Length: 539
Image (cartoon, rainbow, N blue to C red):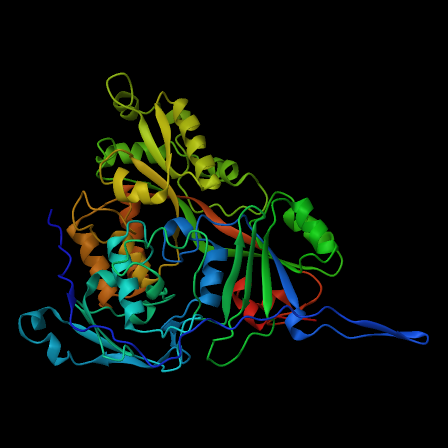
């Protein structure tokens, strides 16, 4: 089996100072409260100013971190904050005119000539708006593009790294505003790259801090809002209007606070008392019933293209063989695992699945011997911060014990799992959330061969590698085949090879209370949840 080495990294220009006016960001003085004066008999009240208006939103418990590119940090809140705070080259397939003046393919530049020319199949040029700047006054430049690229190709457990791994060089103009990106092979969906740029001037230049730098903050903003405060002890994230944002469509409300809601009772009470006006949460057993019973609320359930998945490592000493993976798959009662992992039976999104092995099929033959006295336990790796994944893993361990199979849960952070334990064969499978949307960059990354069996894992956590799957992944990446054809191919491959087992689909409950004017009066017509909060205003 041949593994493809990453292209050499080339740098052809250096970044120099730019003309924006750095300095401390403007600080808003606290707005005075409503003033009441009495003259004679009738009091007069000054209505609250726009700066006093605060929207309070109920959310799930805060994620492990706020880097939208890390699988361990991926959550609705993380993705929504990224959309509100971080700049992106393209949004929903359209160039963001606030950040870019232009973006598109060009002929390879003279700097890429010579020996490297044979490796340059595509060059994309981005021209950054001269007004674009971070909230501390530092210009947004090609250095931010380069930092994201470096982080995506060197950090285990990232989301959507496939396109970045085809980049051979990033060249930056002297003023930092023109960025040319060379690719070793064409990337058809290049518009999906360089989303949610990060402030490189506050970080390590080699992106060595990519996985840890955003655990408790997003230190600078290039969007309409900036993170004002993260209080994990209280479960609160507060965002404020970014006074340095240069683009069109300023925010309608200056302050938004996201508050953890840990029970249906707490959510109902805070809606009733006006402490929150909107919820975007994972449902509990009685969520929809309780919120629907309240007057003046609208309730909607929404399925997200995201699944909790068991990924079997094909480089594991226990699961390398197809027959063993098939046997393990046959023992997984997916509806039962989904119920116990989610802690509910109502509003449950159970993915399509195979029926679990029946008694008539007989007991398993391979795994009991491999994990018995002569072997070692089957180890399921789980991020210790993910309660749902941990519950799923413990359920699977208990299920397997009834078939005489010794299994155990290995808990650590996802960076350790993907960077060390999986490549070393010290865990046999991992349970984590992954995208099920089928977007070309993410789908191809889930099936591309790792550079080597012992390489850190990103996307393809199973490490599964055949010439056929790698070839199809590269054809999807280059646009030679369409997304639907690739999805069908990989689904058939997974059915044969038992690499991924979806256990639970993500379902959310949106609740609109009183006091907010959002994208539409009817919640069913909202195209997204809290990521649209920049357009909301107090009623």
